[in-house]
Image (cartoon, rainbow, N blue to C red; front, side, top):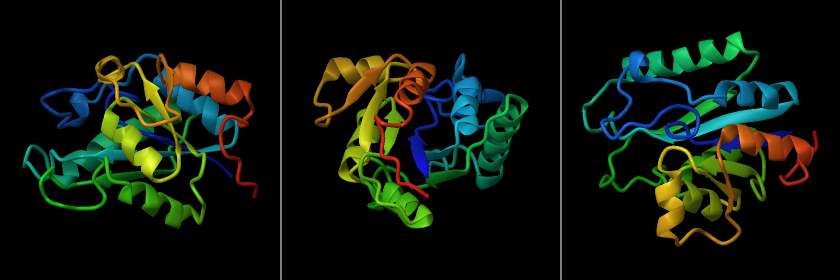
Length: 188
């Protein structure tokens, strides 16, 4: 199985300092859905790992989050793409959970769900916490320069081995050009 893990806000869709709180506020970044479709059609399993502290902050509820993800899935289907699963942390930054990025708990859960060692699995994010969680789980961290990516790059302190790409379509170009050799291919 060829697995790839993507952050949501700032990688797949536009990020917002005010949080994406309803389906109308969820707007795909240019080319992101088509890029996911290309991965799906090349037999990659695409998974999303996303912090959603807006739940803990009372900015939206689970119904709104489900509606946002339903819109994402429906728009993907229209272009031939599939996200196999969305893993999310509903906790606030001070709740002390292990699933909130930068901690790797969400990634460990992904590994358990797919019964995979995540060593080398490519993970694309736009913030330092995405990269830190991926690195701590043994994944290959990639920074997209969309969302908060430019600020993250410019601030520095990226985990060792972090690779940088312009956006999700560029990341997919690299993965597909290397036929997954840049990532861990776990057989199956």
